[in-house]
Image (cartoon, rainbow, N blue to C red; front, side, top):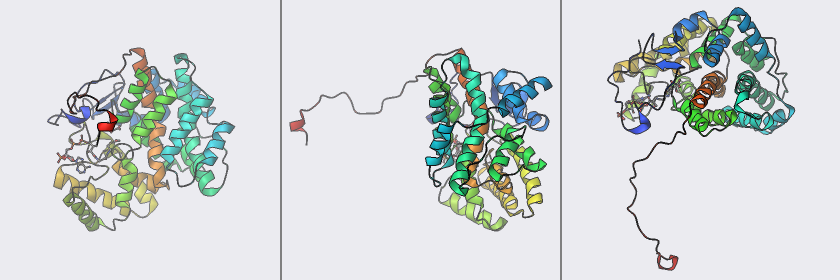
Length: 378
Ligand SMILES: CC(=O)SCCNC(=O)CCNC(=O)[C@H](O)C(C)(C)COP(=O)(O)OP(=O)(O)OC[C@H]1O[C@@H](n2cnc3c(N)ncnc32)[C@H](O)[C@@H]1OP(=O)(O)O
Ligand SMILES: O=C([O-])CC(=O)C(=O)O
């Protein structure tokens, strides 16, 4: 199990302080170390699909077959982009970061399909779950390939749908399954930075699109979701295992952060890592060139040996996504397509028992003083 004991739980970063209650997930407490509404993430990754997991997180229980069929049909029907949103996406340059595109896309959607009251919260959530892959891929294919894609496909599952839009053809069964597992692993993670952002926004009784737009901005940073892209940039030029060790040794010497390693809560392992690592190995075999997988394994061993730092969920996602032909800058947006389930469930939970989140600060500035007339300042 991924343990959290002995971790320095105080001081900066609100580390170790409880900031509220949740019934959505546990991190580092039971099972393999991560549970969604009482189910171990490993169990879910083996025995459920992302749509079942999103349903579980949002509605509280795993769906029956009929409920799942209806839910998938509903999401499938919500993949289309409004014309005004397409026009906005077409104006965003090819060199923009796709996380910024998604942030703008989410915010624009909030103008076009505003959450009029909290009674709409499930509708706006399901719309976001369904339409985020369309937003990213429409912009990506328009800005990079000059094509206006049709964003409605027959794919039952969000992961396969994403790959279909990106590559213009339905994915293999292996790729569809890996995307599905990846979305399950990224779906929910208690009071991480982006989720907390969403909850702070929700606590002012703001609308769902504002909460999610803010959360996208928080996830973007390399200390959080952006680490999967940074990990890819790190491993892509590593020639072999020895080169990987040399690169990391140099970085540690220079006291640089190695993205994709370490965690604010887990102390010895991130339970999502073993799962995505196994899929990355399978993909490497199919890809026919396992260099990226081998250097990743070498990095993992070296970091543990040198620093007792372990791979978090992001590290092996880098090679896995790369093996599926996904451009590096789309890695973190995929995280959004999944985590929007957790964020919105947290917003709903916050709304159901709300008090505005407003902590205090320890003042470390100058003592009380008088305003000097401007003519006397110098
Ligand atoms: C899906 C996710 O969002 S998972 C997180 C993704 N983020 C990353 O991979 C970025 C790299 N990792 C990190 O920056 C950190 O480990 C974080 C942000 C995840 C957690 O931060 P913290 O809780 O402050 O880390 P923690 O308290 O365990 O750090 C202990 C020591 O290890 C060091 N350390 C932690 N992670 C790393 C790392 N990846 N590379 C190098 N050193 C590290 C810290 O600098 C700290 O050293 P210090 O005591 O000399 O200052
Ligand atoms: O919990 C965290 O701090 C970061 C993380 O792993 C996640 O959000 O998935």
